[in-house]
Length: 543
Image (cartoon, rainbow, N blue to C red; front, side, top):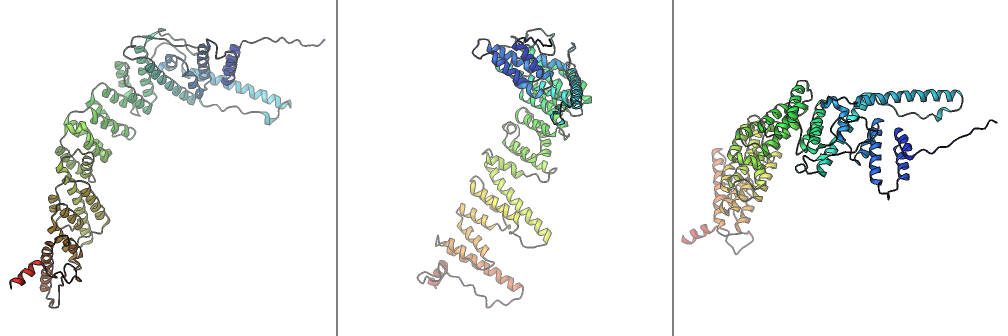
């Protein structure tokens, strides 16, 4: 009589999970799984791992690469199943479905599904069963190359992660020949032709060789460099990689194969060859930063020959002279090979090619680390004096001035550096420094050194020279108050200033009969104390 009979049939939960995963509805699939598998059950852990691996492969097949890793890493997945997706790139001859084919198939299905949905929506709109606002736009499709690129990145990440996991779980030496087993999913794309249980060494060899080939072919410079830098015990097939590099170098525009060759030479102890390759790579802007970093590392840790150190340090100076100077001063390996005098001579030679190179920087590093000999402390102080002298000469030449200018900002800067340096160190030779400062009028530094050496007579003479321009000898007088014997020295120096002034006046035919040099000591208001130097008092008594 027009009735419809409906028969409801129970669908097993694993079929529900499978259908939900195929539509990439992972959260719903996980919910169904959890409802049917309580955590308290004995086989929950095993089933959950199986679910995660099925979910991971289903998402991979559906090109949902952004969520694949979180499921894979919770399982004992087989890295070989990922690598065979790129069989052609890694040199496997066995026939496997490639990542490119996976992407092509899925995009065809997605395009067909999109067409069906569009037709259905159009039909419903025409029959007024659906309003335009109810149509939900689908997720835009990427182009095939973009999907392939995302897929490759996912393979790289998961294979590297598996390598780290294997070395955390197993001892590379003890378990080298131990067979390794993995979990496999029904949803995996390929059935492997490998032996089911390969040893740890064989698995690591396959992973390392494959990743190197993939990074070189994909021009993944940063990934290759990071991988080879971090991996301590590389297990790649050396002969196979060498042959592969020979083929790739001719068409390598990004220098990835040359970087690989340099790093392998370094790893296998051929340091000079590695340096040669890095030296040539350092001329290219794409890899210059990496090249200079690796050259510095080799010089600091491996090289033992003096000529090699000097040759390749020159490259570092051209790139970053301050870092190169610091390396010469602080690195123990280099300081065992080159003496301080050899390094100073080398820096002098380098200065011909790099005018703004500062040898003082090398001495500063040495002294900072307390690794320099005592004579280098004096040499550093003299290097600061030379900078002041050079600046003063430049000012004289520019402005045609006969007098030294001490108010120049650069002169003031290096005066402060020099004075602070002298105050913070004790190992220098004060006399040598004072001798080098003659005629530069660095009075405050001269006085500091005279007082440090307790040469008060010279300190008084310097104070008098300072006050000779304005005939203000108060600073010299203040120092003399510390010892009565200094007043005779003060008087002699003041009289010398007066004599020099009188000579200049005579030379210029200027009357000077009215010039009076009034000298009071120790205080003009002290009536008890003599206003004459002790030597003058003695002469008066004799008379």
